[in-house]
Length: 135
Image (tube, rainbow, N blue to C red; front, side, top):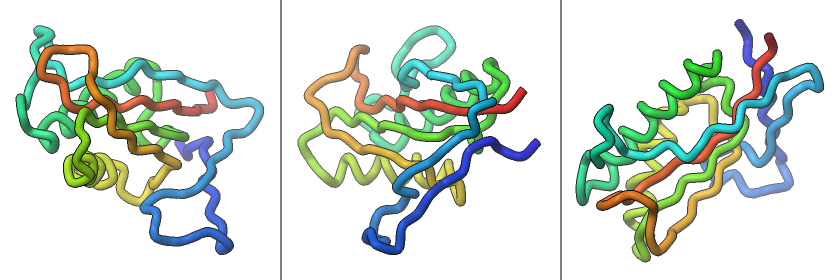
C-alpha cells in the first residue's frame, strides 16, 4: 500500500540536510505516535553498551517492531527525533548515519539532539517517531 506521507523539500533551503524539511499526511490518515525506541533486547537489557552505532541499529529494529504492531512500516514515518547521550558531535553523527541509512530514500524530517542522559542504564541512543497510515 502506498504511504500516506508526502515529503516536502524547498529549493530555498540548503540541501546539506540529509532529510526533507517538512512532511504532510492527508486528513483521513491515522496518526501513530511512537514511544521513544530504546536499544533494549526482549528481556529489557541494554544492548551495544558503549557503541552508538549498535544502539542506533537496535533502536531502528525496535522501531520497526512497534510500527508493525500499529499496522505501519518505516515508510509511514512522518518525522523523527534522534536523541544521543553525548557532548561529541561525532557520536551524534555515528548514530544519525545508522538511522539515515535505515530510512533510505524515505528521508523524513528529523531532529538530531545531544542530551545529557537517557532513561536506561548504559543507554546512548533513543528514537522518537510519528507515523501516518490510511486504513
